Image (cartoon, rainbow, N blue to C red; front, side):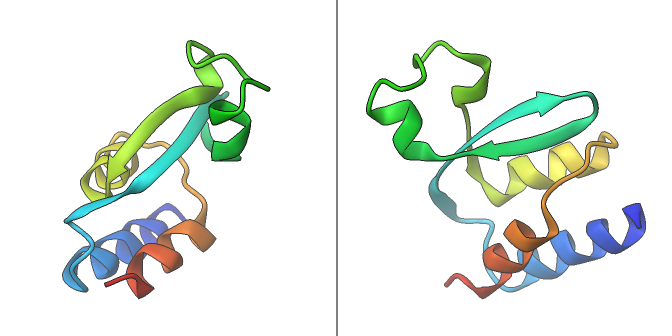
Length: 84
């Protein structure tokens, strides 16, 4: 499964998603990187300093996380691949 995720990420990179992305908020739970609704961080429901409001700004950040053995949302990787 890890290899499939890595392949998806590199496939997304080849499609041009190494350019800056819209901000994605994430937090880590065990070894999983989970996303958070950006509005919760922007509207004060979660403090900006919260671990749940750290940001990933480029697809390269996703690749970094995958290469270090962290699990990403495959749905999000597919979305990265579709964005121009």
